[in-house]
Length: 146
Image 1: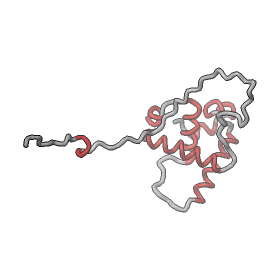
Image 2: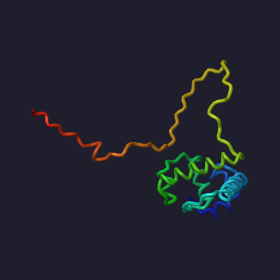
Image 3: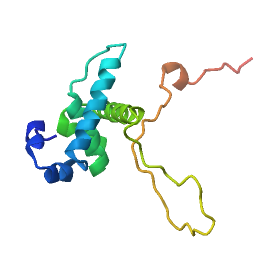
Image 4: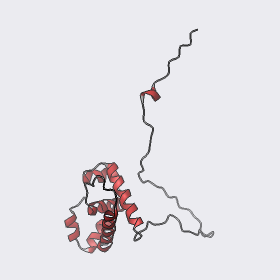
């Protein structure tokens, strides 16, 4: 993750080139995040990253499509933390009403369109698996002699 101060000193073109958004859009995102932080009722454990760094982490993920492992190694946090931060930033920005995610398909599909596109969703998602315990892995012994 680059030094945030160096990034703010970049021209708008350089800033957009790195993050994919204009500085004005970034500051609107920051404002939405700050507004959400002031409205929180539960505190919880504070994040190691500042709000600006959390937004930059999400923008980096969306812009470069790097794996969470590589992004987390650059920042110095665990990849599950990076995943939670990205999801949190995404949810806050969408809930603010100022931003929205692109829709997958238009609301009304025209019958005249010949769809010949294959879309592959290659995003990382956590998978819940049952825990292996001694009770579930040990075979039951049966005495079959009369």
